[in-house]
Length: 465
Figure 1 (cartoon, one colour):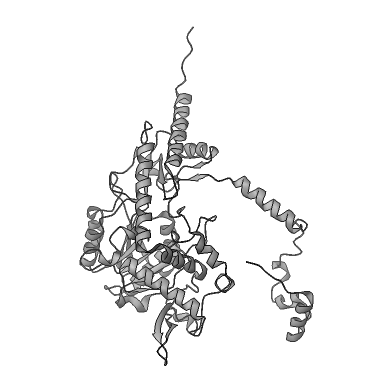
Figure 2 (cartoon, one colour; figure 1 turned 135 degrees about the vertical axis):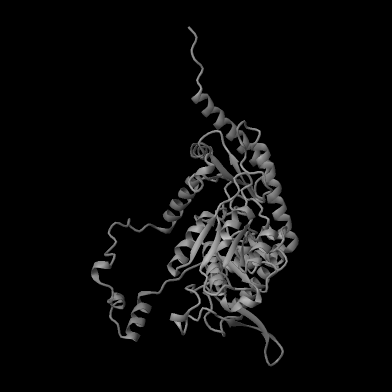
């Protein structure tokens, strides 16, 4: 998007209009000790052509490795139309709306996004997005505690099979509000959450049970059984879902006999390319009964006096504009640009396109696991059905294997050892619809060679005399 800066004359005119002599005067409340100074360490300015060549060279240095890492951020195809449309100035520069009279186009996009997310989750209400999937989980936990059927219970059961970063962010946020997150272990052979692990924790009341689908290992949970168990104990159910998986799997609103109460997750699979860790957009949906506890904004559709459709903000439950001390949440924005990307992406693919994409990801992952399993010592870590990704046991240290694969321009998976030392050595691998048979074969061949080389290094042939 082109950027046209103000000319010196325009800057002087604006300063004169507000009665200020210098731009630095606008920041006189900042103590000198906290100011950055003259930034003398910055290099000299370069001509535009030189900068373009420099950035192109740095991009080439990054290379174009084959990506077989998932772990919550997925290398999906983003149709060219998505970011071509987003590059339009009225979309690219638009910020989240604060007033009901905000741009009708912006409000319609938020409304369409909400409608699509409620359709995917089979729940009644969606907000207009959050920062990312991790903050969405934290907000869902806060919602559940506020709406707890046990009154002032501030205890939530959270499975160890949930994304470790989601657990860390949730702990950081909710612990400041005296909410206890009780970690529930996963089954060592299946990688899933079991009733046997939950039953001992039901002696004391709990506000909610978090149920990922699939979980961090790609394992599919027994969501119907878990949902009915939690609700039978008077607790709410928070579904943490991969939205792409919902094109094939049962939506949270249909889990068990009553459906999950809240659903949340990361919208990155829709129109958001991998970009050095973000930005992403979280989504949060719930049943009608919990709508007043939903943080963020809700855009609604209505008719004006002439019978024409119009869009407006219908609810901002956080109340931060006028009663900050009584705010429902500390969320103060939504990811407007990323929501627009997700909305365009979903509109382009439709239900059939999403289902085909999800099926292609699943088929590629199955083929990947089959091919990698041809290498001796590489086996699935869990025996349960999976979607999108799978944990594999390795016959060599995972970090060393992944480092060797990276040297061959292959991002070979996520090392599980740091977050799950009991699984070490193991990696989490993923193959989206972008990975071809040739890509998978190349990965399998390189992995076999790396492991064979390490085996030979550990067991050298003794010389004969």
